[in-house]
Amino acid sequence: MNLPKTAESTVDLSKAFFGQPRGLATLFFTEFWERFSYYGMRALLVLFMTASLAKGGMGYDAQKAGAIYGIYTSMVYLAALPGGWLADRLLGQRKAVLYGGIIIAIGHFCLAIESEKTFFLGLVFIVLGTGLLKPNMSVMVGGLYPEGGARRDGGFSIFYMGVNLGAFVAPFVCGTLGETVNWHLGFGCAGVGMILGLAQYVLDNKYLGEVGQTAPAVSAQTLQAQWVLGIGSGVIGLVVLLVLTGLLALDVKVLAAGAGVVIVALALLYFGFLLVAGGLNQLERKRVLAVAALFIFSALFWSGFEQAGSSLNLFASQYTERMIGSLEVPASILQAVNPLFIIGLAPVFAWLWVALGRREPSIPGKFALGLVISALGFLTMTLAANLTAGGTTKVNMLWLVLAYFFLTVGELCLSPVGLSAMTKLAPVKFSSQIMGVWFISVSLGNLIAGQVGGLFEKLPLPQIFGAVTVITLAAGIVLALLVKPLKGLMGDVR
Image 1: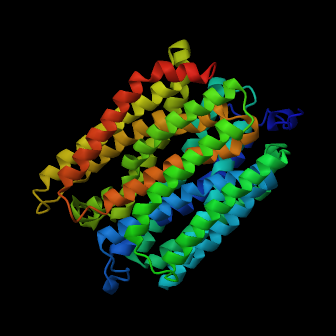
Image 2 (image 1 turned 60 degrees about the vertical axis):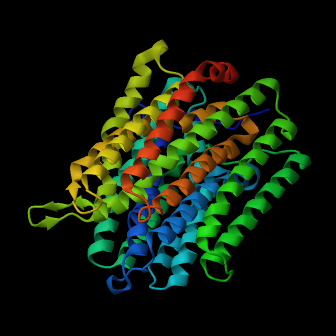
Image 3 (image 1 turned 135 degrees about the vertical axis):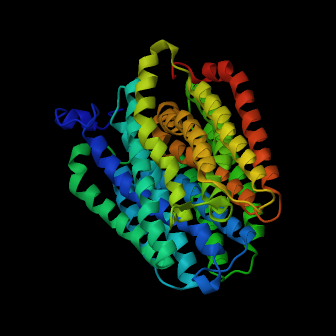
């Protein structure tokens, strides 16, 4: 089999980017603007839906807003599987990213229109576009490093810093405009960010060489199976579209509850297909089993972490003292704390994994560490929630800052490592789809996070945050006990 040339074989490496291939800069800045658009609107999403009609919001209660938030963010990542399939089988990663960015921009501009139906239509467009763009960006990053190893992990950490630079800037621009001027102006600003990302991607993609240019040929049997998977995902997306736009009468809370079952079933079917009919050899099957195990613990991690946009965002808005002198800090700006820590700590972690050499923790070891440390973040929130005295007192912003610090450290132990691990463990002909499976775990976590956020007005906050603390800590301990057998499944991948 003749593999496509990599960017490193066709591009002058003297034009390097922090010691990495120059093509990483192209993907870094494209991801920066795409994440600017996504996190700009996400910082506003729950706040806008729960704001009263008199304040220009939608007037939803926390449970309905949480259900919509969970459905939307889970569908964003669920769409990564058919998006990866389209890239693997039809488009190639390069075109998939371009088309996805265009669809995302259309979605944000739909949100800028003051209409409930265009609001939901915009969410659907963003889901479809992100499904094309997100997994294939990560696959192209992996394609820059044919040698693999710690250098690839370092490259993914730098790429992840680009993600968080966009996420850091977005709340200050989109969040401030949305909360203090007009919600829809904030959403429109997110669309402008995506347009800038597309322009940068088109003008600077020469540094990618041939990475992501072609889609590999596959057998007719495999292609038919993938069509079934793609059509199934499309039907799910169509149902969501009809419900959100009001054309199909179904309570979004009921839809959110059922979506979790569908996502788990979809993941089980896909893993079953790969293991039974994917044409894999013994080593590839073992690695797919390792991916399945990491999938479970990834979903548990994200079910806690992604409450940043739901319960933690509402906590910032309602129970946090945000006055600095005479200036009130918009609640959405606290969404910039996590990416700020990422910007500062991602280079440290990129250096750390290389510097540790043979003492570097394995992939499942890093996952376990991430879960345990993130549990400390929710322990912090449990203590802060107790200080609110049942909602009668507001707490200092530093409580949220400390919680985000622990969550960020946990994220850096798991998320960029997970992205890199998928490129190492995936069978070559299913590379984009395995990346899509990784994002399905994020999808399931987001859905759960939205449902937990919906309990914000129904259960005592110490009870909510305390339960997340216990579940996340227990998951980390269990995974630590499974490190050795998982390393056996992964073979020489570390």
